[in-house]
Image (tube, rainbow, N blue to C red; front, side, top):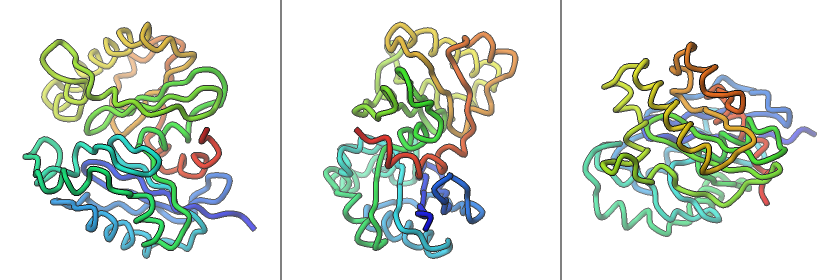
Length: 250
């Protein structure tokens, strides 16, 4: 009997989910709901349970969410601690509530399923990596996500998005959706290319994947200039990766 996986991709602005079989084929049209704010851990769990009720039954669940997640526990999350979403005021009470929250256990109990919670870029990467060599995944969306795979195994997460750039801001802001809208796709794509060029000697990857909701906005004339070691991948990997993620853990 094919193992069905409930896969939920949780972003700063939206949550999407589907149920997939072992080959990664969706057995339902993806469900999309806005990320509700303010978002306490309790409301987050309740929201995902409601989303799951609209989909076919599954035998396990994979959830990708923004931030530093270690062994299913939230070390830090950037958007869910704000009053009204990305780039709004941080609420101290929410920051305290999310810090150290065992989101994997809470969701596993609420869904009644074996549950895996990872950073959203890690789940996205699980859907696209070839499984050989040193592979890096950067997701372009509300901010910047990062995941690293070595020989097909997921490496410990790093929050590259918070690394300083130009001494004035972070990659999360410099390459994120707010700046894309301000600059327009052409100038924003140039920033993506600059970022790739600057990070290449840092990671020395065998292959870099650019995914996330904004990867489709990279201007075609710039794709070849990114290099042969760079692949632009569709955002659907954020859901499809929910199946493969279980097999890529170290």
